[in-house]
Length: 250
Image (cartoon, rainbow, N blue to C red; front, top):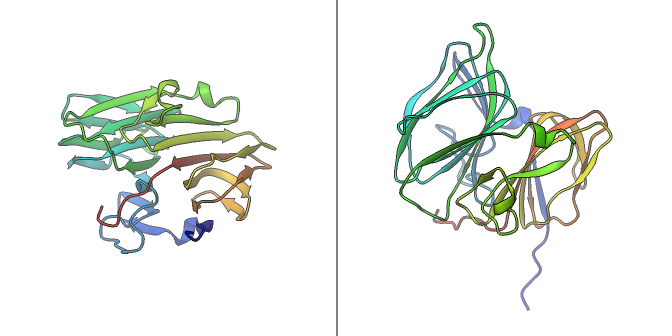
């Protein structure tokens, strides 16, 4: 008989995460990124990147290429301009979620389009697709109304049972992104999945088996049963539910 898989929780505090800081950008990384490389910290489940970026006024990422990635962006403060080689130009504000499927190749730029003295702050997440379609695509949806009840809701998915009922589809059939703007006093139960990644975008909360989690904290959970998150004062969390992981060669 195979040995049982034991649950594991890995907490990465916001002030301990990898950081990139240059004149126009402050970025915190959950996984190896850019010149930060840690061989044992490259992904969790099928999630490759979870960055929180703050871009200074008038600055941004100039046009650069991607391929074979699915990129989701969630703006917290300010306005972000997305432009790509398919001809899309989109202003992304808080409450809107974007999905860029890079396919066999695309270039795009992301720049601060806020007021002249205002930074833009956003979370960007990269997922490894398992449906490698060649044609790139881009979607932009406003989900602010769906979050008004303060619950944790699925917003992007490629999974059966979710895929036909979420604002955005994913090309990975094993992954779902949930977002919750939790009201004060709210308790939510996390999805039951072998791999979870929880990011506290705003506020503070308490997690089963972890204790207090604060803005900027990232929690990786492997085979953790019956996990709940409670907030006294309100919190915004992003939760990746994943039912597969990348093989060592990916």
